[in-house]
Length: 74
Picture (cartoon, rainbow, N blue to C red):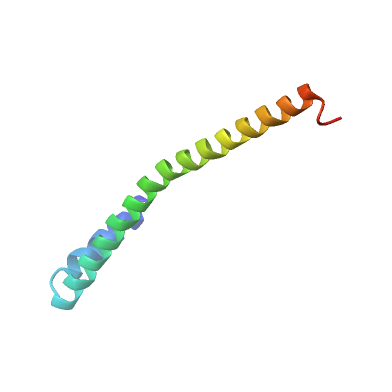
């Protein structure tokens, strides 16, 4: 992994001297930041979805248990 980082750093330094490469680096940094934001947000969304499913499951169980108690389901 360290070898890969050194290789990437060397190529990044070489690309810094070319104008077109600077645009490429900027786009890569923007893409990396966006992907980090998506990863950070996905954890929050996953918790909300899991909570929603849990709430639906609890309500469903409550209604089924209520129906069993009243003799609706046998």
